[in-house]
Length: 261
Image (cartoon, one colour):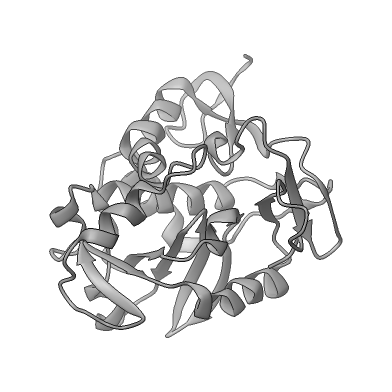
């Protein structure tokens, strides 16, 4: 691998090809298809580019990806996080979306926050080439970018003006899809959203952060994780696609179902 400047630690080291979305989201021996506003097709290349040194790649894996992917299990049929929540007792019951505590089920919610911020940061430091050959320009995060980098380097806590919300789906349809992040403005905050095979992530960044979102952050003392059906959220997920023209990646092993949700 050639020497270069690692985008995270800013040191000159050997720089390796890093994935935008984790490599585990590309299950082997399964046909994947992508969908963008410009078209659809087989997903033949993973979305990756030289970005990080070995140490920072390992930091991303150990501080976030391993825990999230263990819970999501994108390469298998089982959905460990959904199974744990299905038999857990909610802290606040709601017929559509109940609140649970990650501490109650033995899940490290701080690592979920790290995973989400690492994905958003990757989209802000590089222009990524999409499966159809188009280029996704980097997100302009202004003053949010450096606090995110320091947080990912474990030199600072999650910025106080940031809230990461984790919603786990109990339906099968959302287990077939992952999307790349899109962003819009809500409550005077940047609102990033993406879906990863049954887990719907939101990251809010703004000042002042509304208490409603701050209290529901997965790193709050309540270690919030929400669980319920995502069927009512599928129009919202499709709106992410329509507004931002970001790729939706789905398993294509069931040809009787439409490509686009």
